[in-house]
Image (cartoon, rainbow over all chains, first blue to last red):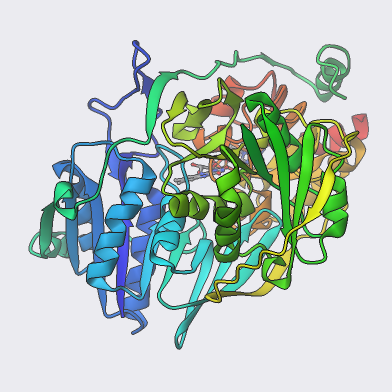
Length: 249
Length: 308
Ligand SMILES: Cc1cc2nc3c(=O)[nH]c(=O)nc-3n(C[C@H](O)[C@H](O)[C@H](O)COP(=O)(O)OP(=O)(O)OC[C@H]3O[C@@H](n4cnc5c(N)ncnc54)[C@H](O)[C@@H]3O)c2cc1C
């Protein structure tokens, strides 16, 4: 079966983002970028499905400017077979991303679409579910275990109360949580090999979808800063302060 | 304007998150209805009817909704959507699961995890793990929104809404519930507790979380954890606090053996008072802590329990 893995280029998770002085957005100039950590887990899971003989081909797709080819190459180095860049300079709402991905699904007919549960920039947690609805596929979100059995996939999900397992008919959407796997590092030979794997570029306009924005970013401000407090020397002092100063116990 | 709030419940009782989501609906303003979709969920519906500000509770009681599978919920809410300008759900793992399907079926965007309402079409939400706060205006006719519970105070429960049974049954037939392993605890829920004590990698193993339990019992606290503690298998996933776990804002948050990574801070930095216990004076957690103690947790936790 084919597995499709949509991935997103985002700020590196170690970088603390700054807001632009004019409050128009965050400042990403000269900031280190990387593949979204949850997307990386999705690529790893696809590779494991292939190693287990379940998947036969892994296609990575990313929507964005030419720079996201870097993250597609990362996915290829981790084990994806080929890549598609849907080229656009626009910042798209998740609904428009999902519509573009729907077109890719129509064309490629994957049995499983593996996505990250959220991107660590917009923190939206939407795209996989939206794609599920648009393609009428069932979904297993926030996955910590994925088991393909015949024409079904069992997905164990991290939910607020603990874990929940659902059985989904294939084709299905799976979004990854942190504990699904630990992604491997790409080896140097694989990074070299990835440079020669096929990467196709398609213009977003080619898909015939209205990509006009559905929301307007009015402003972006820094969060309220918390002042560092005091260091206390003893537990007695701590308890005294919590009782009498902060009055929280 | 009419607003539909989708209730968060387990058929037997309503989750406090729903009362906070109703508060967000009140802030938007309009006629507020609540949908309780479940199976044998009358008890939850009766509770929802008491939420102040709600005029009507719609009850879709059918086995198709027992586990609120996203496929079936997405279809149901979409069927009802025509009557509403805003559709709200709590940003719990249930709400996050089905709401984007509703948005996609309605061909609108979703505004995720709002923490404040500016106007009927403009909302405030954290991005980049809370390191930036975005004000977003929706351009869609129907606003599909998830609500972060820490942003709103629960409405009172002295209301008396009309309860109306729906006959809608939407079963996509593509997914099925297999089982759930839910953590049973005598302690308050992480999201609802006024005191939270969390352990990190510094706890070294699951057994040592007992050191937190004694303190939690004395303070009526919930116990949380960092991702590192969950990944290492010390404690279950539902205890993770952070950008990608639970967001909490208790009166008192005690971080023990937690370094204070951006992703952890995202889940707790709106707490009223933060205490950090860490043996490394340079740990970033001290930059957000009101009270810090630089010490070995194995020395000070027993002392703390004794002092309470
Ligand atoms: C995509 C993504 C999402 C993430 N989401 C989350 C999330 O939701 N929540 C989250 O918490 N993390 C999250 N993380 C992980 C985060 O980046 C950190 O790795 C994690 O929070 C570290 O956990 P920790 O503080 O327990 O461990 P460490 O960073 O290892 O810190 C352990 C601390 O314990 C102290 N310590 C050790 N021994 C003792 C002792 N005996 N006495 C006192 N102090 C001691 C040390 O000084 C140190 O400061 C995420 C990461 C990524 C990439």
